[in-house]
Length: 313
Image 1: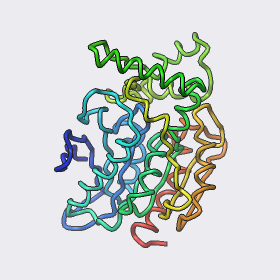
Image 2: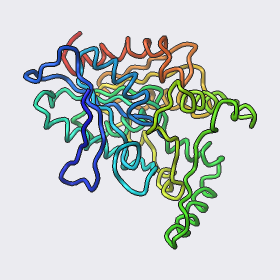
Image 3: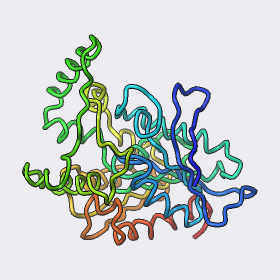
Image 4: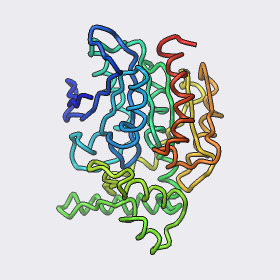
């Protein structure tokens, strides 16, 4: 693995990334590459890098797992901004970097994303035609989630509160940084937060199972307005033409990955090779790192990428 700071000519800040190499990597060869995109509130050292990125590199791909702008070790200020438009632009900027690497085949680039990252990679694929294949792992349409559960089903009320808070901050007030999860599973239980996705997210992000220094699970409240008017799947019927694989568990939770996966699979009728993989008996956060559901995902994703990035199968 190699850690890099990506700073393209048009970028005001750097993107921190880890490049994961295949076994017996040879700089004199060219390899298919996969850009791996982390979930909302996560970082490159968690599921996108240390689980899926690591496994794909072991299967012969160069993988670039990176931190979103304003998050993890990447630059950008203020911190902990979750901006879907920027998140999608980050993918293109990482591809801009990838195509300069002599060992990357610029005509064989795929993307994989987990949770919110799974929604972002689908959206990026609509317009970023350097992407030759996309895999969404338990992908979530963050715009839909913000309009619904994350705003307590009151998106206009949330927007009004965000506007007032942004005005306070512009006048010198303190930033409102929201912690997205309880401090621990025990705290979640004590507060009655036992809904499947909320509790399992806490078990992943707030215990040694998945906890990493860059995975803050925080969001700057005042800068989230545009998320409520964003749709990961807009124009999927006409613009998502590349091969697409959607992997979901069939134990649904409040964050809606099962629902979103079924929706985009149904809508992306222009895709050249459209596949739906359902991990029976597994949940959203099981697909982050549990060996059996991750194996189900990889058993399908690896040959899918090989077919569309290497012409195999």
